[in-house]
Length: 362
Ligand code: PMV
Image 1 (tube, rainbow, N blue to C red):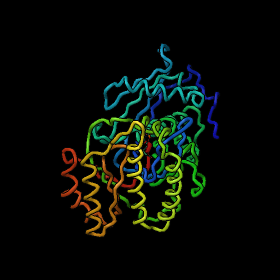
Image 2: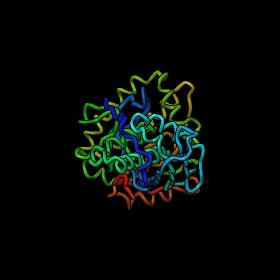
Image 3: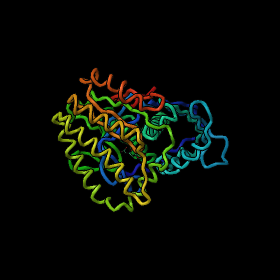
Image 4: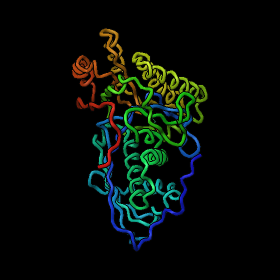
C-alpha cells in the first residue's frame, strides 16, 4: 500500500504568499466498468476507460493565508461564477480525508472556481472531470509550496490517487487516451490505489475513437453511483460479476493490441448492458435506462447489421447513450446520428466527443 501521509507538508503562515493554479480535466468513458467498491474507495474489479476531449471541467484553485478559523477548512466554492455552499460540504469531506497527506489544507484559505463544458442538466456524470481537476490542482499547489512533485510520473500517480479518493472513476481521467484502474494480472503496474496510462499495447485505431454522447434525459439520477456501488454488496451476482470483469478486461487488452474493433465493440456493449442488469438485479432493484435509450440501442444494432460499419454503444450509470466508432467511419455515421438518433435526444442535444489528450494545466 502506498502511504502518502506527510506531516511535514505544513506552511509557515507568515511566509505564505497568494497563489493560483488552474487545470482543465476531461471526463472518461469506461469500457470495462468499475461497479462495486470496498475499503477506502478501492474497486472490486479492474476497469479501463477512454479519456474524452470535449466533456471537461476547468477548475481554478486560489490560496492565501487563512483569516477565518471557525470552520475546519476555509473554502469558498463557485460553480459557473455562483457560490455553491452545498458543494463546500462535499469538498470539506474530501479535504478531511486528505489531511494526513496534505496537513496544509487546514492552514490556507481556498477559493475554488469550477465550470463544466457541458450543461449541468445534461445528465452527464461530472465527478470524473471535477474530482480529477481538483486533484491535479492540489498536486500543483503542493509543487508550488514545497517543490516536492517535479517528476511528471510521480505527479500523475499522486493526482490519480487523490482523485480516486474523491470519485473512483476520476482516477482514470488523469491520463490521455486509455487508462486502467484496478489491479489486473494482464496489465503490468496496475493498482487498486491509482490508475495508470494504458498506452503501449493499444492499436492506433482505438486512439481515433469517437464517443457521441446522446442525451436521452436531463433528469437527476434516481439512484446515485455511490448508492449503486453500495447495492453491489448485497447483489447475488456480485462474485461472478467481478470474475467476469477481470476476464473481460483481459480479453479487451488482447483485442486492443490486435486492433480487433469488432471484439472491442462486443465487450463494450456487453459491459454496458451488464452494468444496467446489475442495477435491475439489486435489492431494491432500479432502472436507469429510459425508453429512448432502448430505442437507440435497437437503431444502432440495426444500422450496424445493415451497413456492417463498426458502430457500438456504451452506457454509464444513466440513460444516455455513448456511440463508439473509429474515425474511418465518421462520414457514414454522422448522417445516421443526425437523422435517427438526434431526434430521440432531449431537444436534439448530443455532444460530439472523442478520445482525448488528457488534462492540461492552464
Ligand atoms: O466514480 P463513480 O463512483 O461515480 O462510479 C462510476 C461508475 C461508472 O461510471 C458506472 C463506471 C466507471 O467505471 O466509470
